[in-house]
Structures are given as structure tokens and as C-alpha cells.
Amino acid sequence: MAFEQTRPGEESNPKAAEKQPRETAKVGVGASKKSPTGDTKSISPAFLAVTALLAITTLFLFIAKNNLAAKNKELQGQLDAAISSKAVVERQLSETSAIKDQLQVTVDSMKKDAEAFAAMIEQEKRQKEEAVAQLQQYMQKLTSTKKALESERQQAISMKDKFKKDLDAITVQLQEVKTAKESLENKLKQTLASKGIKLEKIVVRPETGEMVSEGQILVVNREFDFVVINLGENDGLKVGSRLEVYTGDEKIGIVEVEKIYGNMSAATILPETQKDKVKEGCSVRPV
Image 1 (cartoon, one colour):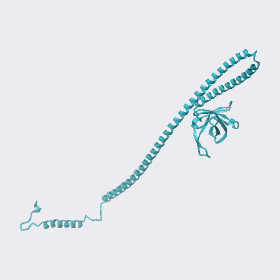
Image 2: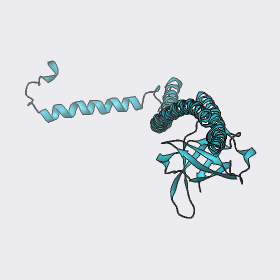
Image 3: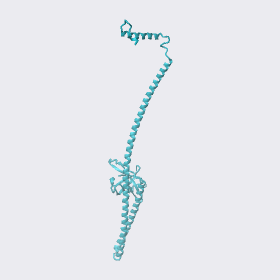
Image 4: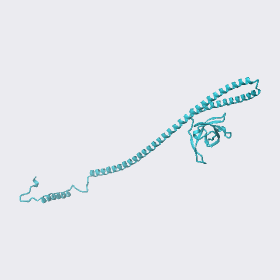
């Protein structure tokens, strides 16, 4: 390199070599200051436009960044709320499903009990028919005995006549019971077919705080003034138990249990009851 060579008789001095370019540079700077075309106040319009464009672009980018951050925050809040709502809905759906399953089990159990009750009524009907047949045979036997002893025992004839009348009355009563049972069986079948059976409710006696079952009237027989209710021995009822009858919140009378099964019973409508208001679906509560 030629600029690194020293003249003959001059010592190689690095500091001097370093100083020389600096002086040259100073001269160049001075020269530029003195240039007739280089005024520091006259800046190119294109440069100013580019600078302004860069500043505006930076400002827009900054605003867009802030808007994007705010939008992301808002969307995140909405997402969190949606996740929370989904969890609540899923929990409510699970609870509703559990209640539905429990109610279905209870309804199935009530249906089985009602079917069993209907079967019992049918069995009693057959037993009553057999009893009527036996009574008829017995009446024939008594008639035969009456003819054999008619000439010898006038007093026996009188007693037999009275006994015959009693048997006729019993036969009529048995026929009435048979008719009532048939009517009850038909009403019960219609009730089950219409699926109008409601589940038992639990009420609290104000005076004792005791939890008791609230039942419902399933069948009303106005000819013989009795009802069938969906409460029985399993609910703590006994023969002779009395229950108040309500239509809505209005008390309309009292019924007394005279025949009882596991989950159902037949009760007589007492005279003080407003019988015309007693209907299927009325609620009953233990007195």
C-alpha cells in the first residue's frame, strides 16, 4: 500500500499517520460548510414527506396495537363468561337429569302399586262371586229343609222365613258390593290410563312439626259415598284413620279409612263433607 510508505529520512510515526487523516477530515468538513450548495436549513421536501409518513405510520400502528390489545381483553372476558355459563348449564342439566330419573322411578313404583291394587280388587270380586254362589246353594239347602220340616215344626218355618229374608238382604248387599267393586275397578283403570296420578307431597303439621304424607283422591264413588286415595299402610294410615279433604287451599270435608293396602286405601266420605266438591285430584291430609 503506497500511503503506508514513509519518505526517505522520515521516521515511521504511527501517531503522525493517525493525525493526518483526522486533519484531512477536518479540512473536508470545513469544505462542506463552505460549499455554496450545502445550506443546513434547506432540507429536501421528499425527506420531510418520508419522515412525516413514517411518523403517521408509527402512530397508526401504535393505536392499532392498543385497540387490538383492548379487543383481545374484551374477547377473553367474553370467553371466560361463556365458559362459566357453560359450566353452570352443564351442572343444571346434570341435576335435572338426576331429578327426572328419580321421578321416573317413583312413577313406575306407583304404577306397579296401582296394578297390584287392581289385581287385589279383581281377586275380591271373584271371592264375592264365589260367596254368592255358596249362599245360593245354602238357600236351596234351607228351602229343602224347610219343606221337610214344614208339617212338623211351624216355629222352625217362621224362623226359616226370617232367615231367608236375612239371606236375601245379604245377597242384595253382596250384589251392591260387587257392583261397587266393578265400578271402582273401571274407574281405577281409567285413572291409570290417563296417567293422572300425582306424586305424594310432604307437609308439616304446624302444631307438632311432624312430617306427614299428603295424598290425592284417585277415584270417587258417589253412589256408595267412598273414595280411593293413594295413601296406605306404608304411609302410616290405619283402618279408622281420618283425613281432611282439600280442593286447592279450601277444606271441604273429612273421609275415614275403612279398608287399607300398602300404598292405597278406601275411605268413607263422612256426612259433614261437601260431597258435591269431592272430585278426583283433590288432596287429602291426615287430621
